[in-house]
Amino acid sequence: MKEVKYQTAKIKNISLDDLYSSNPKALERLDNLLKEIVAIEAPITMNILKLRLRTSFGVDRIREKAQTIIDNEIKKLGFVITDNLYDIVLWPKEGVFKVDYLRIGIERTIYDVPYQEMVNLARDLDLSGEELYRAILKYFGFEVLTKKAQDYLKFIEEKL
Image (cartoon, rainbow, N blue to C red; front, side):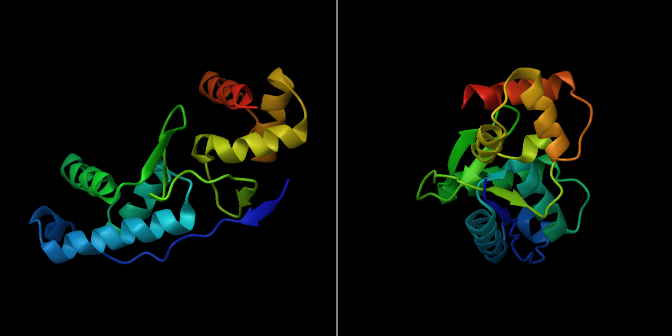
């Protein structure tokens, strides 16, 4: 399996006050930031996207009003969305691309690794069932196979 360094977008600060006031320039900056993040980091889970946006806004949490604005801009930009069981994954509007690598160099939860990447790891491990799940967890530095992790890893195994 080919491993590549996870590339992250450069974060530009955006004011939440400007967003809340529907300032056209702030919405344009948000659109540009969303396009840049998705273009560089796709496939990207909504959880990781929110992390990038929290950094941009300089906040610990994105409130419902801001999330509604973000969701509307995501729809407007036409990103392709796939289901990752516990989260959605965003792709550029050009479509879902084949993923033949596993990105490393960023701390992610097991659920933040899109299944398209995880399938490559699972194929290389050539295991099944609980052996596969434990090997994947170990690869990412986790030890405990929780029910939620097991469900996600079963979801991955079904994609093989």
